[in-house]
Length: 359
Image 1: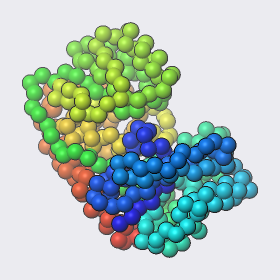
Image 2: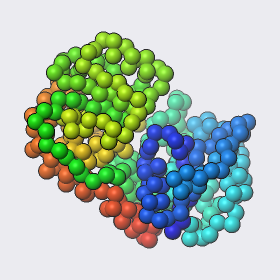
Image 3: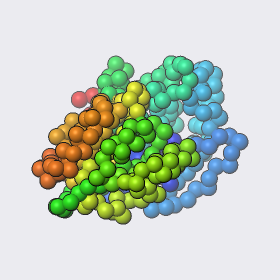
């Protein structure tokens, strides 16, 4: 089969579900075309290229998606983007499946009237709006969902929000590696892995490091300039901390970690809607239990600890340290349920039954 992705992501950014799904389909001998984040009309778009057997494109946009406040601006941008997309894909076959990750691409059905369009919403884009109002974003989100054959979301909270406009089906990320846990007598390290953002509660993280001197804390991942300074200050303040550049999990001492932390600030709407992060099943595949903060709607499981404050996190770290072997029966079942093969079968089922989101 052939798949055409529309995203607001560059391919070489931190991997998310759009990267994961594109790689999964390509790995299983499907043809994948990936449209990256649009640049602005005054910028030079990146030339078409091929990487990992995936062909990449980039088009232009007139106005940033959060600033398309009026219907005139939205219409002008729609015409502008549609024109460039049509130029590339005017002769596309009807059996090509459109995988849309853009909440504002309500115009795709006019460009591809005979193609199946599957929209995947992996973020609460409306809550992320930096303007004091977001009704214009809510409007285009509704139009995009209504013009799609199937709507999928990675968040149960988002699914509930969308229910009044269109039926949506939950579609979680998955583990690309099989479950692999090695019993070790001594697991004293704690891992914070993935994109490290200013939405992290660094004051809370610093207090946790101070109060768990017998644990070594690894902070590993991509970050921005502001957060790099915060990490630098943490490394000066604490001795039981290791800060590393982005790397894959197989390059870390995974047999020495007793837990993984994801510590967001409380009260961030877009974060509170998260049911499961893209990295969750990857960490679980190594038998590492998850401790999360700032995500009250996170997936419930005996090996996932949803914490409200520092005391709960400290207790969870100690519990994981002492009982990680006993937690494996829950972790292994969760990883197997959310395996790569299971998720591929689920996605193919969705394609073959485009009205499945209504069930």
